[in-house]
Length: 296
Image (cartoon, rainbow, N blue to C red; front, side, top):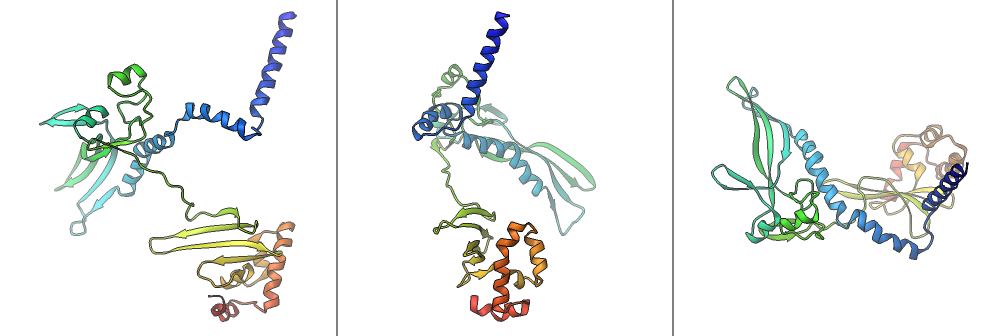
């Protein structure tokens, strides 16, 4: 009975500790204490390594599938199709068919690029014969140090020292012609995606930056004095949102309500915007076009 009691108390203590671990960290000082533990587990370049690993294992195959088949217009019977693509391990060719692995340290000393062959399997037509070739090298890809394709991947300190590499080197960079180079990450607003944020007047708004190869525009919907407006960088004035629905041919107030939502709180918020159309005397798409010059 005594052993069972102690076991129960230990379980309670463990549960209490677990609850404390789930509790939010309140002060800034306590949050900074977590930074060393986070960096010890994640490191400073984990996002670089994860991104590169995803590219060589997954994304490069998607690129191949998007451009899988090559056809010739002059001879439709001829085609070439990619069957598989793979990034091999870093190596160097020192002579005719003499290929051996290479390390980052050797690339630094010999002013070489630390890269690996890109191997593909292809299928094509030769005459009337279907031919499949495997292991065809079509180029080379620079390899990020400590990534899944690097010779230093998951090596311990002794193995790193044997390769003349510093065990404290986190990797996450490339070696081109003997020079270490890193890709800088820039933080940018997501394109073609709706974002909910607060503006300078502390109002919630929904914005989207629409980007194509030719143009770049920004559109926002915000609430002011119980009414919703649409703002666009090509418009001189903000437009009541209900007028936008009318401009797209949605002329019935009931149809607008169906698109927005039938919940009471939504209709209460949107009713003032619909009343704005009635106050301005705008009921049809043609009437919106008449007022177009006023807004543009």
